[in-house]
Structure formats: structure tokens, C-alpha cells
Length: 200
Ligand code: FE
Image 1 (cartoon, rainbow, N blue to C red):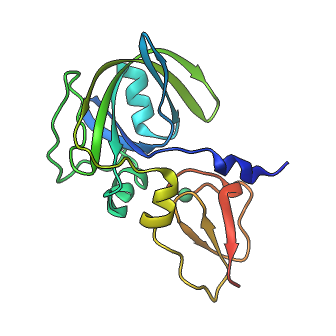
Image 2 (spheres, rainbow, N blue to C red):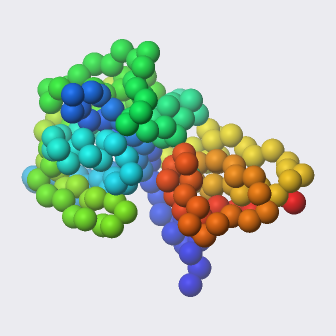
């Protein structure tokens, strides 16, 4: 079995936003339209994300579909911090859709509003099945794919003299000869299996 086959699956990148008192959002790569009539989507959200808990409580969310102009700072803002202890939307002035949840207009080519109709506990994640309650096209720019992000947006690791472990998902670098099996990437929450050894 070659696990690299899993990297041949194609994905996009999205900001998932919710509102429960405060506004919050995180980066996800898993929205999929699963039926057209009714128009329904699924999203899988890591339970470690504060946005996950907000959606479980409120049942509503928006997905902003990021385009190829999205800078690394946007992924850092939404993907590498927790909304539990920071205001990820600080300094942003974002419009609200019909459901009262914010969505991105800069670096997003469309947004979709979802209302949860079912959820499945996947262990690390919850899979939400949702009705599409609203959606709008924001621009004709190309939606960013995961492959495009890796090739053109994520910073390239520098040549290393020390041994480092680089997260294949987000680029986070951990210094040290060993990487503990239970290591969890502080930025994207992926495990040790998604790190590769560089330098040393
Ligand atoms: Fe990571």
C-alpha cells in the first residue's frame, strides 16, 4: 500500500465561518456537494477547531471559496491560531449573509451558506451534512486548489543544516533529531505521520 496515493485526491481551500456570540472561522479543505435536489453539501471539521463547536451549537455556517490570490497571511490568520483565545477576524470588515454569519469578499470567488441536517462522529472530526440555504458568486477568479497552495502560496522550506521536521500539510517546522509519534502540528493539527524529515 502506498499512502502517497491519498495525496492524489484533489481538494480546494475554504474559510469556514460561524457565529455564536462572536464570529470565528477556520480553514477547511473538505466541502463537497453530495446532492443537487435537495442541494446538500458535506463538510468534515476537526473537533479541535472552535468553529466546530460553534456549528454544533448553532447549526449554521458559511463557506468562503478562496481564490488563487489568497496570500499565505490569510491561511495563517484562519488556519494557524485558535478562535478560543484570539479574534481571528480582527481588523477585517466582513459582510453577513442571510443567516447572520460573515463571509469573505477579498480573495474569495464565491460563498455558500449551510444549515446542518445531520452529523456523523468521525472520531477526530465531525462530518456535517447541510442544506445549502444561500450561495453567491463574488468574482470570476479561479478557486484555489490544494495543489496550487502547495506549489505557489505555502512558503518553501529553507536549506537546513539542523535536522527539522516539516509539516507536509502547512509547512510548520519543528526542530529536533526526533519527532514524537504523538506530535500534533500546532498550526494545522495534523499528526506526526504528515511530517517529513529535512536536513541534519
Ligand atoms: Fe501542519
